[in-house]
Amino acid sequence: ATECVAPGSFNLAAALSAEIAAAGAADYDAVMIVFNSYVNAAVYKQHYRVIKPLSGEGENEPMPEYEFEPDTKSEVLVDLYEYMLTSQLYYCFMDGA
Image (cartoon, rainbow, N blue to C red; front, side):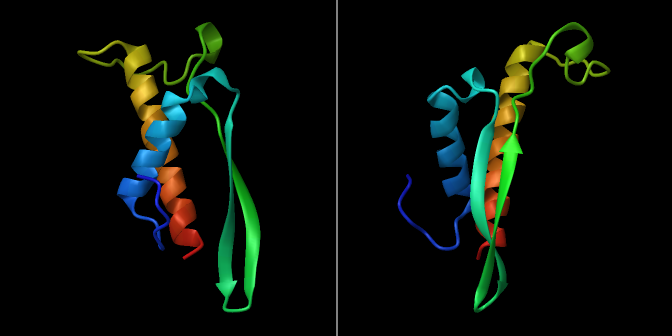
C-alpha cells in the first residue's frame, strides 16, 4: 500500500495514516510530517506540520460542547484523529506535487 505514487492519492494517505495509527501514534505526543512545498521548477521549500492527538480530560477535553452517538467519545476521537492525519498527509502530497 505504500508504493511510490506521484502525486500521492487520498487512498495512499489513508493507508499510511492507518499504518501510523496501528504503530501506536496515540502513544506519542505528536506526529511530525516534513514535506517539500512547490514554489517553481527550480525551488522547493521545506515545511513541517505537527499533528497532535485529540486527547485530554477535564478542562483539556477536546470538543466538550459536542455529544457523540452511538459510539463513545473516545472511539470517535480516535477515528477523527486518523482522518485528520489522512487529510494532512494528502495536503502534503498535493502541496509538493
